[in-house]
Amino acid sequence: MAKSEAEILEGLAAIVAEETGLDAAEVQSAKSFTDDLDIDSLSMMTIVTLAEEEFDVRIPDEDVKDLVTVGDAVKYIEGAQS
Amino acid sequence: MSTLSIKRGPEFSRIMGLGVSRGENAVPNEDIIGPIDSSDEWIRKMTGIATRARANADTSVIDMSEIAAREAIAKAGLDTGDIDAVILSTITYPHMTPGGAPVLADRLGATPAAAWDISAACAGYCYGIGQADALVRSGSARHVLVVGAEKMSDFIDPSDRSISYLLGDAAGAVVVGPSDTAGIGPTIWGSDGSGAQLIRQTASWLEVRDGTAEFPTLFQEGPSVFKWASFKMAPIALEAIEAAGVTPDDITAFIPHQANTRIIDQMVKQIGLPDSVAVGRDIVDSGNTSAASIPLATERLYRDGAVKAGDLALQIGFGAGLVYAAQVVVLP
Image (tube, rainbow over all chains, first blue to last red):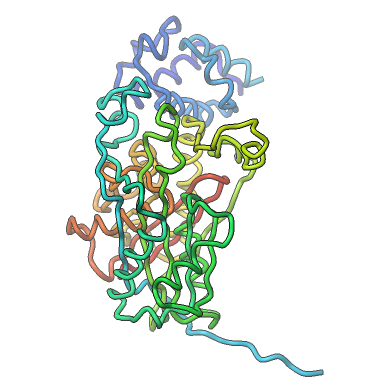
């Protein structure tokens, strides 16, 4: 069953927290993965892979560069679910 | 109609001896960061590498292979004349033909051993072990020399931020021969050519000939390779463990291709290896030496006292192709 935007944000925040050690509460929609959360390209691929598994979606490597903010990723996953 | 005779080999094979040769120079990050506008801190964070082995300009793939091979043959308790097949895995021997293996065999005094090169990049050593195991057990060869050797520094671009700064020069060799007990588990291997562009040389020789491209160097789509290696290779490693009839708890050492410590760390996590398993991390000092990296990391584990003869090691190679191979082996 498709997850809501809020559910996706919560799940994604947990994945980011697990990968980076950040507090999940810091993982907010407006935050930039690179500039605000200090996530490098390899950690980003780990987060993407875990998100693919968690939300049962496919995020092609070439699309990852477009996921600038947490909100971008949430929207992408929401769209990819349907 | 006549019936053909066939050869039959021993039931089992094993690795009998190991030898290595690293490029003469340990090149620190400080020496290569200028052209890539980077830092020692960034390279260590992204790759784990502190130095990479780089060979002198006049040292060849064959030179390093010969040193490693002689050590492996001596440690196996054999003479070079006992070798009846030579497999050289390399992507940096600078001749399309003849292959490097016959030249190496001749240098060693192993002529007329069967000799050929394999191009399986960073999976080449494990491909070679798989071939050697099959050759011995089929009776096609008794003592197979498997060499992974690369002079990557001949094919790098100092300004390339994708892969060149990772690469090192080295050779690793083993002898595979007959055994009374199983010394090499089943090889789990495969390829995915749909990812051929992820790790590649930057131009074909024809483009160089036609003047439309510079001398080719190596390039990789780093994040995509990281994702593939970190997450797709763990199931292959687990399959190799299962095929060998053992469990992760039986493994003393995990010796993956030394591509990047971040990949190694993620693989350990994905495979679910217990903390008791020693993990090969020779990349820190030797860099990514492609086909040579697994024997190098194995040698390092011996030197660090982390493994001994008779221990089980899970080894997995993966790289340009895309290709991969894994097996559990008994260490010599």
